[in-house]
Image (tube, rainbow, N blue to C red; front, side, top):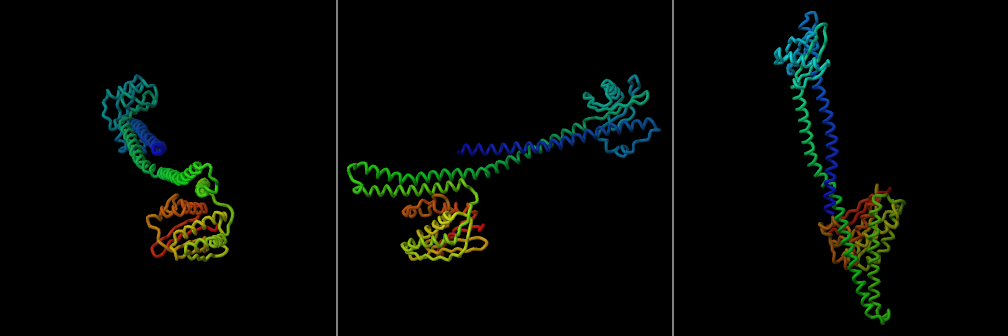
Length: 414
């Protein structure tokens, strides 16, 4: 099971990482694409600006484009130059904008642009982007260097990659922590289930051993009558009844687990249930040397079946009578406000503080030896907690020296 849980953890981490990588990668790709497009648009704008400014410089009658003129200093980072060529392709450098080129460089660039036979394009071998415009007998060319654009794009892509890598690394650490946190309830549930099976097997082992031993004794005296072997027959019956009770408790808990948080149907008079339980436990309390008192508010009705509520009340009273000190007192109190509150209190030795958080666990015994002597399996309080939880209620325990022990059940009225 440990291997299965470890695989589950890594599967969760893998799913989280894939989802985050997809979402974050898409967001960064969109943002990077938008930025790259802006860089390309800046270079294209420089081309148009250089073409317009070059034309204006050669033709005094042509007014300068003010929108670009105001941005002249902005574009000095992108080298550009303007040239003209006649119909024979002879090029002349007209204007250079932060471009370190000579006439030979210009002539070669113009020749490459003419050979491309397009009005707009890139010269990869020269790392230039160009635009061509025919003007009478002349052709005008504007060239812009791509080094700035390519460097900016590389920086943008590298930054996006670093951000993605750092984010995924951080998410990996977080997902590892989250995987442990999410798998922990599964692991604890598996451990409880394994412990539950082990405890159930252990509890069944004793009566089965007794049954087999008694059966062997009976088989070793085949000629004896039932009367002569009555003791062993009664032992078999007692152990069979104990096993029946244990199996019934286990089935009740199993049905509760299967039902989950499903809201019980119907209504039950909790006041009547408590009064009936108090009356049925008066002989039990008397035999244990206890005084049984009750203060039950009338007309307290809650959701659920009377049978389950009767079992809840009986478990708490049985527990109080078993562990109350002789000469002490057991008190049952039922009050009603915005919720129904049932309290069963007994005087006697307190429950150790370290044991109190585990009282509602299955097969847990604060005093294992004493509980076993009295025929308990450690399932009573677990069943009580299951009944309360299915009704969206709450059960708590308070126990201290000199104050005794009180189990309090709070149930919603609706």
